[in-house]
Length: 487
Ligand code: NBP
Image (cartoon, rainbow, N blue to C red; front, side, top):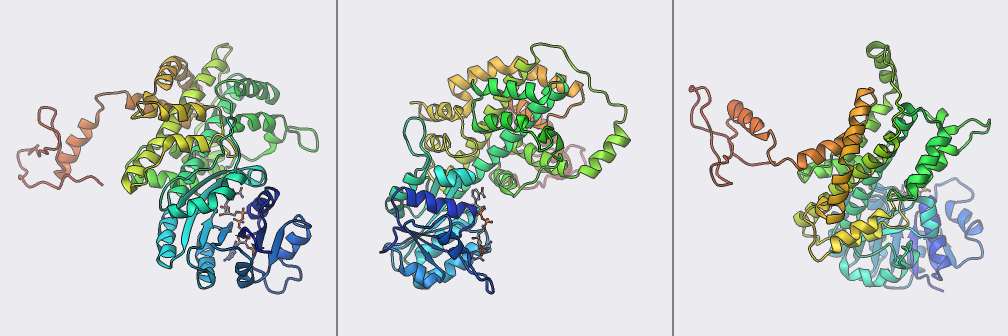
C-alpha cells in the first residue's frame, strides 16, 4: 500500500502531525535520519510506539520512503530550519518525479523559501513553504497552517492540510492559500512577532496589577479570567490565568520561582528586521524583543538596581479604576500591535507582489495558533468591509474603541512611569498612536539638521511634494547637495 503523504522529521511537531493526518484517514510514510550506532532509530521507536497499529509506513532509508508515496508525491519536512532543509532537499531531488511537491512546515526564513520555490520549480517539482502554529497540541489536534509557494500545488495538498488544520467557530479550517514565494513563512513570522508583543503586553499588565495594586497571584488570575470573558478573550489570556494559579510541588506558586530572563528563538527579531527592511514601524514588537534582551542580562539589572535605584519605592494605588484602565490600555495596545503587524504584511504584499488577503490571514489565526482570539474575527471583518481600511485603526469599530480607551490608556502609562514601573510595550503603543494621529510631527527639525550637516535636502510645505531643496545654512556652504534618496 502506498502512502497519501510522506513526512520527514519525527521530532515533536512531525510526530504529532503524522498522528493527526493518520487520524483523518490518510496513510502516512515517515522518515527520520538515523544516527549511526543507535540500536533503535527514531523511526522504529515511533512506529513501535505511538504509531503502532496505525496506517503509518516507517522507512529508515530515504529512497525507500520516497518509493512508498503515491505520485504526485507530497513530502512534508518538519525539521530544524536552515541547512537541514537544504540538505534534505538535495537528497530528495534525484529521487522525485516531475510534479512532486515538497512542503516545508518548519519555521524557515521566508527568503530561504523564496529561493527554494525557484530551485524546486527549476527541476520540474513544486515547493510549498508553510507556517504551522499551535505547538505540540495544535500539531496533533488541529493547527493554524499558512501555506505559500507553488500555487498549482495547492489543489493537491489542500485536502490534507485543511483536514489537519484547526477549525474556527464558524466551521472554516484555519488553513488557506497565502500567496507565492516565501509568503507563507513571512506570514508565520509576523504571527510569531505578534505573539511576542501579546506576551509582553500581558506581562506588563501582570506587573502593574502586582505592584501598583499589590494583588496576589490568585487575584490577578481572577482579573485575567474576567478579561478573558470580554474583548480580550484569547488563548494567551486564558493560559496566563492558569499559569498564575499553578503550584509547584511544594505548594508555592511556580510563577514566583521562575527566573525573570526571557529566551527567544529569533522569529520576533526577524519580524523587526524585515519591518525595518520594508521601512515600516513595528515598534511594539521591537519593544517586546528588546525587553527580552534586557531581561536576559539579569546580572546587569541586579547591579543597576543596586547602584542606580536603591531607594526606589513603588507607590501602590487604591484607585479603583486602575484595573479597568489596564484593560483599556492592554486592548488599545493590542490593537496597535496588530495594526502594525498587518501594515507590514500589506507592505510586503505590495513590495513582493504577493497579493495577500489580509482578511483571510486574520481568519487563519482565529483557531489552532498561539495568538488565537475572538478579536481576529473583528480584524477579518474590518478587512472584508466594502471599503477596505487603509490602516486597521481607521476601521470604524477600532477607531471608536481606541478613542474611547485613550483616557484610561494615557492615565495608566503616566501612573506606571510615575511609579517607576517600566511599561515599554504599553507606552510604545501609545506613542505610536499619538505620532500616527499627529498631522505635523517634528520631523521638519530632523530634515533641517540633516540638510545643515550633510546637505541631505528637504521638501517644503509651500512647494509641491517631490521637489527637494538645499539651504546654505551658514552662508559658507556650496550648492552641491547629497542625493535625496531614501533607504
Ligand atoms: P526540531 O526543530 O528540534 O527539529 C528536529 C528534527 O530535525 C529531528 O527530526 C531531527 O532529526 C531533524 N534534523 C536536524 Br535537527 N538536522 C537534520 C538534518 N541535517 N537532516 C535531516 N533531519 C535533521 O523539532 P520540532 O520542534 O519538532 O520542530 C520542527 C520544525 O517545526 C522546526 O522548524 C520548528 O521551528 C518548527 N516549529 C516548531 C514548533 C514547536 O512548538 N516545537 C511550532 C511550530 C513550528 P534527528 O532526530 O536525527 O536529530
